[in-house]
Image 1 (cartoon, rainbow over the protein chains, first blue to last red):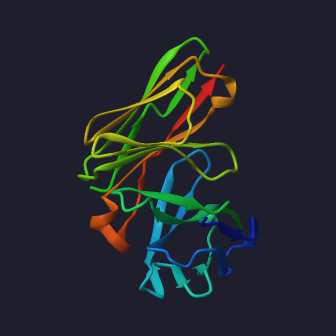
Image 2: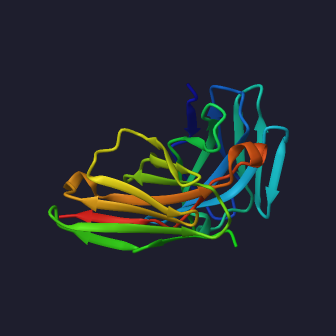
Length: 116
Length: 117
C-alpha cells in the first residue's frame, strides 16, 4: 500500500527566504507525482507534475525534483513571498488494476506561512 | 480550457433537506471524482465515475448519491445529512489513465463548502 509523508507539517519563514518542502513515498513504482497548492477553503491548484522518467520540473520560482529510487520529491520555492502562504500537498496516483482512472494518495500537507 | 467548475460555492442545509452539488468540465475527460475534505486534512476520495459509470464507491453512506448524466457533468445528491458531513466537497476530472500514462493528472474544481445544521 502506498503511503505518502510530508515534512515539515508546518513552516513559517520571513519573506525572501528560499525554502524546501519534502514529500516521501513508500512504493517507488509511480507514474508521476503531483504538487498542489491549496488556499484556505479553496480547491486544489496543480503546481507541477513530475513524471516518473523526469528528475526535475520548473515553473517560475518553483522547482520540483524527483528521486524514485529513494522515494522522495522536493518542492523548492525561491525568494518566498507572503502570497505563497498556503497548504502544499503532494500526491501520487495508483493505477487501480489497469482501469481508466487513477486513485491519488495524498500526503498530509505542509502549511506554509511567509511573513513580511 | 483546464477548468472544473462547481456550484454552489457555499451551501447550508438542514438535516431534513435535499440538495445537490454540481460539477462540470469541458476538457473531454472521461473520469470524474468526488472528494470530501475536512479541515487540515487531505482530500478523501468518495466516488469515481469512469465513462459515465460508477467505478468506485469508497463505502460512502447512502445519504450521498452520485450521478453522472453525461461525460461533462457530475452531480452529488444529498439527503438527510448529519452535522459531521459538513466539509469542503471537491470535484476532479482526468483523462483515462491508460491514455495519459505518465502525464496522468487530476484537475480540481474550487469546491463547495457545505454546512449541515
